[in-house]
Image (cartoon, rainbow, N blue to C red):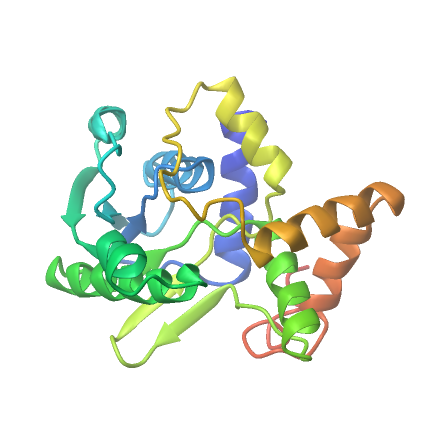
Length: 244
């Protein structure tokens, strides 16, 4: 996928769900993975011509793994003229050595978001952009359906009243395959996650399940996404049907 196509899809999501207002200062959480770096490219380029002026900063929460090298991310942010910050933490030590969590992802995510949100507020940002794409939306719905017995997923825009921050998800109309295509085409400097739990989670199981379902029933992922838009969930149903 070309950058211009990415910008078109991202702008549509932003416009459809009113993600950006004049004067916003938006933080992008950068893990170093393909999704967050694609979002960084998209938002930094959209900033140049979007009718509502907004500022950007990129932030990585360093969990404390020894073999994480962020030099290429720093160089990328410099080339895109986006200020970049790294938050040093000992989250990895707490989760894997002190607590020895059997299901480390939940605690890690909670601590990582806490560190990120605190720093974002210190920087004067009012919004944070997460790099969730369409596959993430559908996978989260399936996780909730299978393991919680409810039809639920995150919404395009979420206001966090405890922190007075708004979460936006500009990649929500992109397929993961499109993200991979973009990263390969533009040789985006992806940093592999050093986390030992990477690829060994319930989400990975659901990701593979969705892939099989979509192969056997072409278009099923898109239909699931439409069902989410039309399913009456808060943050989705209020807007669905008015895009056109």
